[in-house]
Image (cartoon, rainbow over all chains, first blue to last red; front, top):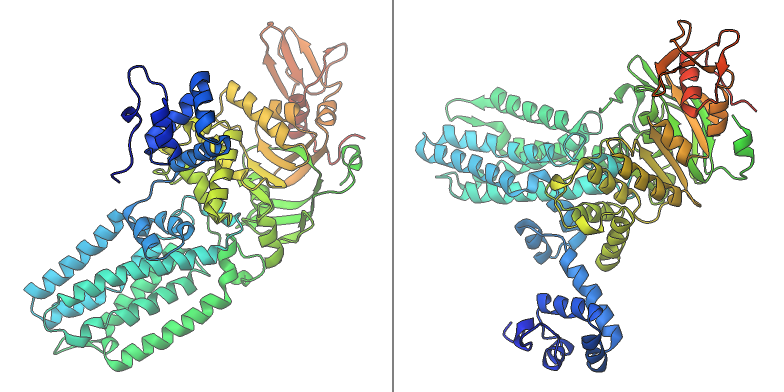
Length: 297
Length: 296
């Protein structure tokens, strides 16, 4: 901003807010540090206060000071948070997402690295074998993200969050959507780099969504970490059981398998919706059958 | 379970009846009933007595296995009541977790979002207010990982004050504070207790003496006492004496700074009885036969 100036511009010698500087301040063209200096100075210097009183309305001084304090206190925003706000996510929701461990730069880097290795293996490997490995690994990444997105032992503010009026289910869904979205973007980018897979490269997407929904449904019964572990183990077992030679291929990535995952995902989503009250306390008040209640800590 | 201390106040803000909670074979709460009224109530009890379980239930974090609870006229078992209640309570857990990279301001701001203060300007003003109230105005831009243990507890307290709640549930808020910090904390809580219901658990009987109009003593999941601090001290009336030597029959005895021994229990004939403190009453209560009600 070329028309913004600092406090030294108009002041000479010992620092006082002279008329020129105050005029720049009154015009709203002083930078943050300069504005802060002027406002801090006039509160302690009677002469400058008198001068400022003639040039600047007291209400403007007060408002300017309040705005400055707000600016200085403004929470630090990371790249992900700024990106979310640019994409139209409200700033408070972006803040909630920014505190998600699974959306931290280090986590996303780990996901990207895993995918890069999977793609590298597919390019160097013997085609179908490696492609199947990629399709098996890709749905596990959002699952791992979900496991470290929310819950006791994961979210430091889990207990404070439970006692707050925001529905924990809303926070969970918000984070799950962001985690799955981020992992999906990375996996989609990685699948573009796969050799000769064609439309089959998207075969991981429906299983990823269905497994995520299943994890959330299971998390109404057991700890989120265990829920995602069960889903992941079930997925790997299903791939191993259904793998066919020669190929190798799996029915899971064929049309029938994909349709089954679509249905499974929808069913799991219904279970999550019906049992969402379970997320609102560490033991359900009235929504969980006694036999299914587990102690979480 | 009513006492003279309670009848002086008309409407209880918390009514707990026969609360029960078991973890495996452990009965964390075994039929706990009490009323709370505006003011500061202290919850005393040894480790494992069930204090944290009780506070978590009041903070709607946990649900009891059985019993009824009415808080600020709301029923936390119902979804609507629970949400409305969460909007009116502040909870400071025993071991609050922090996002270590957050500054004090960012952390409290984050909790303010969880408390659904969405309008940024108003939210930031409220965050500044509670940080000032907790004496953290000067360090609000410091990362939490750089703050001392006492400061962190104040950050945890600050978040509980967001939105000026009608009920404050504080789990061992004075743990780890040095004497000066404890004094400042007492000043703050005594101010907060004016017109609000504050329930705090503590191991410090001095905190209860200094702050509370009512005290609950929980032991093995059962309430052994509900009443005024003076009444708890009064339980030890005639049971505290001093002597040159430790009395072998005393429940507890220790050598004081004057060189005399302070004994608690059944005094021998001719013992030099002295004025009991709340701590004496508490020790006698836990060491002797349970007293179900406060002395009238």
